[in-house]
Image (tube, rainbow, N blue to C red; front, side, top):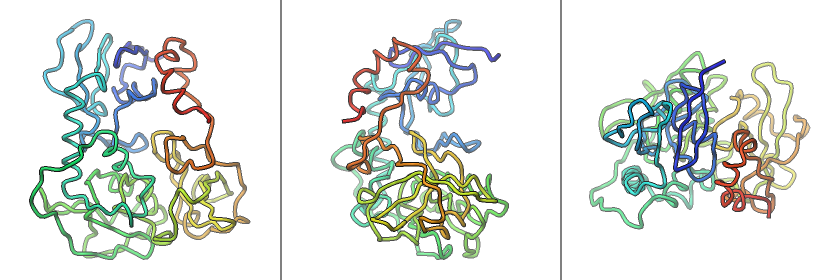
Length: 334
């Protein structure tokens, strides 16, 4: 049995395994105290520490050493210690720092939301709405890149990229042939392929699902519809290559997009193959499991709300239920 430690985040205490990061401890509690994360991805190794949106303040290091940490720390890379006290949304310093990080991410990000296929599912949209400012102080020209073709299935918009590295880690860890990566340094860094090779391995489509912005989008879904006009349905099939568990996006009776299933933090539960993603777009190809539960805080939830299912650590702890009462009331079924 692993050692348990107690950590307090924004006044709410929870017991977690000793090697748990602050971010994952906050996710076990749930609610508004969970720091946002643009680069960390729990299904991939070595992610995190790049976007800095999950910065928190450690006001007490531990029971053994109660001294606070001198600077804000990335919660996705900092492990908890017994007796640690952390401030997230209760710290004005963290709120101000996060506002600056959002401004930095938006410096070169174009205002493509009206034409971007990621609209409605974009983590940067949510982050900018919740933590951003109304104006930017940046007065210089934005970055521009030459357009490159990386294949017939994936569209790359490098101007939208925030260099979170998720797509690179995905291709590196779940495929045998990674042909793309980050080229250049500093403000010249960009996601690209070596000598313009196409990305066409069996699991290449997963880079679309892990991208938190609209830098990598599905060419087969490009400009076809808006996600809030579609009906997401859980389905599965007997696939020899992957788990076959997907989300089908219906427009009327037509399947216009297939994606991997995602959890409450927007992370893929199980990666799927390209055959399931691109080649199986008939209802007859799938066994329908039922409608997908969508949080009513998402624009995708129009006309199909789902019941809130709090994390197990909250369901079993009355104190955490009371602490999250306002959050539960906000997202319960209307």
